[in-house]
Length: 411
Image 1 (cartoon, rainbow, N blue to C red):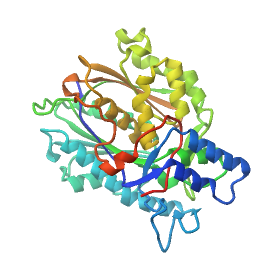
Image 2 (cartoon, rainbow, N blue to C red):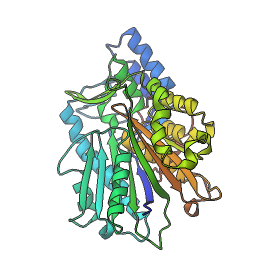
Image 3 (tube, one colour):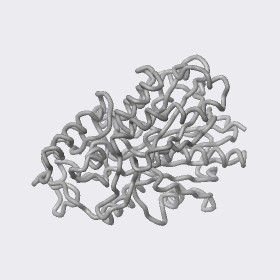
Image 4 (cartoon, rainbow, N blue to C red):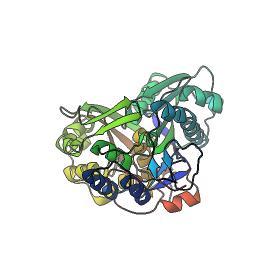
């Protein structure tokens, strides 16, 4: 049975963070050592990020609050809110993004309405509340109260693939199933000032965003499919458990992103791809460049550099990942869906086009997927920015290269 992705839409919060402005704020914090200050400048400048988005509007120079919790523009100080304060904001602001992305995905899928959704899978690793985002979507969009709901929490940057894989399994088990998948992450809630290299890296890299998709095997005459979901595989690298992690601290969630992660990926990416590509004999012995599109999670510039070098991919094949990183930063689980949307909006080639996609997370876990881009649904004009960004926001998301860290401080 063939299962298709019928729609894919994205959403970001309204506040734009500019990388160079964020760097200046973080570099000016008291308590930084000489090495810490040098790391801030190096990490932010080499991240290959121009703009990010945040649900914390206080992380700007324009917002004035009588009781600032994250950033006081009058003193220039980054503050240290508790995990509870951060999570309370997650409950409020993540709900908005979950609902916006879910609503957009439904609206983009002709022939499918809220009453048709049989399964709902939500994904996030940046906060917790209950009744959770699955419940909020059901109520806000008027889904059937009996819809089967699943939440994938605290898995990290690769979690969109387990969600899509679950959606595919639901549809294979029930040909009439229609699955709504929604990822939303507020990574910027957990930024803080520190001399710790991992914390600095996270502050330079992470951002907020959401993506929603409708998956079904059901025949829908009014809606041509976007992607055919072909195969998924999971691989744990033999090393790396201590190099990438996501822990809960008293002042937010604490990221561990060791500088050895790109080297681990460099050493093990070929082996991680082998189980996926062996699913199709026509791909198992071909050069990687023969696969037209590569939807790589842009965990950071150095990760993309290692993947490109090891697989000998062309600059063109890395454009979707690098542009997503440049314009949005790393939005954890939602990010690879932004990359796939970029690929879907590229001009159509002749015939269907294969996509090899991958994402990385704690463990070190490598999730891989093979898709087929359905040519009949490819638009004629290129895009690359989320459909939910307004014109002013889009104009600010314009140029640069690639690495790992991000940018605050402008509304």
